[in-house]
Image 1 (spheres, protein in one colour):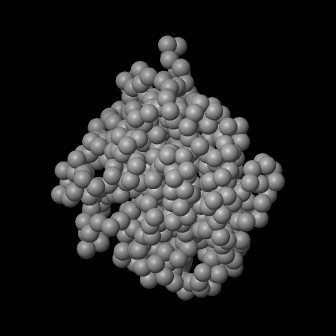
Image 2: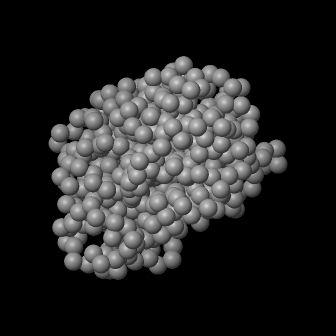
Length: 484
Ligand SMILES: [Fe+2]
């Protein structure tokens, strides 16, 4: 068994791999209850040992290279000794390997995909030095084709504007993406002029080092913060589409894999799925740094992993009262489900979820009160897979991990799951994906004729997802909502 570790990095995580099987994978924050916790902890190590006893560990990133880049960029001195980190949580006896940041992203995507041959694009804020990289994955392994290095970074640009808009960088980029639908991209040319010497995707040359943010920039008086978000999102989409089309010229394949933190941008993902020219697109459901706990092992082993889904974390092992859940939903209540293995990745996909009836004008307000989050943000629908095309213009045939947005055909019937532009971040559900969640949806459909539910994460704003049964009970007491 091999232990993959993403530590001393935002959203620390670990994954245990046995041959081709991903036995367990989890985020540190779910155990420490510190959102996006940077450090692995003893609680998760103790749980890891209930799944197996690794003989060696693989560290995601090369610390020396990363510290050199931080020195170069004038950030505060940084040095991480992975061996010391392992010792701190009782893993100092493990033999330790290290693999590169972008190589791990590429490997997490390729070796969890069902493609034998694929073009791979990795885009994030920054690895050790790389900010964008292109790869070809085949039977011969991963071959790096091209890279862009710091300080040129479209991801850092997006993160800087996340901070500029008063949001948390490296955490709330998805809110900027949501804000974009409320504005107009009227600042695209101005922002390009102010921030880029050259913008020829995949090539970029930046005018500023955005590690320090972009608070020096002033929004023109004729625009508001939503216009800024719309413009930044538009630039991101233009860059990603340009990069993907360039990659298509380098690799003759029908298959595209998109990885790195920027692959969490589901609006851009949808455009890539529709406009890139690739027939098939795989975005591993945890494409950012946390997912590279798996990627680090995959990069070292260079062999396919069996991908059975993202339900890889803590287990709440109890039977689920399907009828009870549906009865509460029919009574118009919000219902919490904490059952089975926790999701490895940022989305709650039925095992740590809050559910409610998506129909009618009140659904969103009911959920928002509970979640204490911004009024403009919609919730996602989970829909029986075979009914999805009746309600949404599908840009991909199935979307089990909420990675793409689709136009909703009936926004007035389902306003709570539609954004201002009438799009929805759809989760399609089949039996193989999640039998229990499928059973809830089937019974709900049988009793109401509606094949979808509103699905959001079982937490409140700023907190990690509920992880254990104890968390679930505490959440139930605090919020007065029954957890099944
Ligand atoms: Fe990354």
